[in-house]
Structure formats: structure tokens, C-alpha cells
Image (cartoon, rainbow, N blue to C red):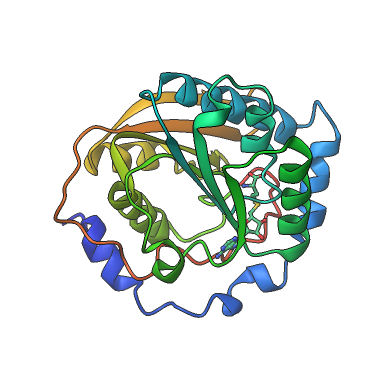
Length: 240
Ligand SMILES: C[S@@+](CC[C@H](N)C(=O)[O-])C[C@H]1O[C@@H](n2cnc3c(N)ncnc32)[C@H](O)[C@@H]1O
């Protein structure tokens, strides 16, 4: 029998110590350097992510737009869009990242752009302790996560996002398509948890892909799992 999101959540609930994950060993600042080349696969993936973020913000209902970015890196995807987007004054965003140098860089950029509704938090984005108070989020970014965590954690994260998101809210995610390509399963898991697919973009001449899903059916009885994911990958394939 296929496990439900709740089963998967329980199975992984014991993994709490994020310092055991590969994050403690990986130089994520170095990983970000692939963005310096404007035509690298990672930069082209970034263009696609930014386009989808812009579309989601443009389609959001009038009023405040709550945005959360999990494992935000230096935040260049969201911050790059907010620089020019007409909905910028409406955005209340929290970017969550563990690596201090990236958080510092993101905060510098927020100050530079004078983005008053945007904060960068140095915290564990996989933990209920960090996410527990968030609700009715209109847009969640989960870029660079699904290629670095166990398959069961991807399912738990999708389930957890259905708790954080408002009905009609969207999420944008990335994952490489290296064999065995897990993206067909990921897309099916979203649908099984009440989402509809709004975009799936395979980045040309690379294994990168970007997906976007909208929560159609909100189940108010669901609770946030204690732990959504723990990094086991180190970004070595670049396009996670
Ligand atoms: C592959 S990078 C993606 C960065 C960014 N989202 C992007 O796509 O450019 C993964 C990031 O996740 C961060 N990270 C890993 N585990 C984390 C956790 N538990 N909580 C917050 N950030 C985490 C790493 O420090 C790293 O910056």
C-alpha cells in the first residue's frame, strides 16, 4: 500500500538533529558561484524560478501576500523579482537559511533594495520549531531541496506544505532529472496531497527542472509534521 503523507511524516519524525545532516559539511557559498555565469544551467534555472515567482505574485489576490522561502540560499530568486515587481509593497516574506554567510548576503541585499516587508532568518527550515507559527502562506519556495533529501522527506515536505499554504496558495520547487528521474513521482505526490500542477519546466540542455503547484483542496485537519526534511545531499550534482 502506498504510504500517506502522514505515514511518511511519522516514519521520519525521529530525525531532529540537523547538525548531523550534510549541511554542516557542505560549502553552500561555493555552490552559489555557479550563478556568476549568466548562462550556466543554474542561472537558467534561476530565470525560470523568477518567472514563476513573478506570475504567482501577479495572480495573488489583492492585499498582503505572505511568502516563505525554505533553504533560501542568498535569496536571489525572490529578491531579484521583488526588485521590480508591482506587487512588491504587498509582499511579506520570510526567507529561512542555515548558512550564516548566505543569510548575511541576503540581509545586505534586502537593505540595499529597501524591502521593508522581507526578513531573513538564520534557522532550520526543516523543523516545526521554525515553521510552526506560519499559516495561510500564499507562496512557498522550495528550491534546491528535493535533490538533497531522501524520497520520504520529499513526500513529508509536500504534506507539510499543504498545512502551511492557504487554499489557492502556490509553491515552486526544483529537482534535477538525473536517473532515476524522480520528477514524475514528485508531480504525482503533489496531486495526491490536493495540489494541481500549474507549471513544469525542463531547463534546456541540462538536467534541471522547476515545478509549480497550487493547493486546490485544503484539509484543515492536517497537522505540521515535527520534521519535514533533513539534507543528505551536498549539492554535488549542482542542479538539486
Ligand atoms: C542547493 S542550495 C539552494 C539555495 C537556494 N534556494 C537556491 O535555489 O539558489 C540549498 C541551501 O539549503 C540550505 N540548507 C540546508 N539545510 C537547511 C535547513 N535545514 N534549514 C535551512 N537551510 C538549509 C543550505 O545552506 C543551502 O544554502
